[in-house]
Length: 95
Image (cartoon, rainbow, N blue to C red; front, side):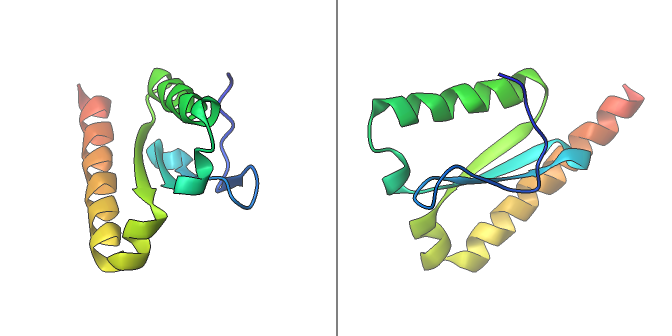
């Protein structure tokens, strides 16, 4: 599977949304219970994550329930993960 850089991706209204920051090689997936209607979609999520890992893209998943319940905490955690990714990339440039 080839990785296509996009600012956001949506397969269908009930599916997940993935936002990728190409310059920081980091992706955030908004995951919902409706996304996993069966084992196939669950498996394809794992394959997509592995594909991203193979091209050195960091990734995290956020559930819609968590985002609705605690948006500030989710945003803070994603910001922390993105900052961690930035540090890793800076270290890689000098390593």
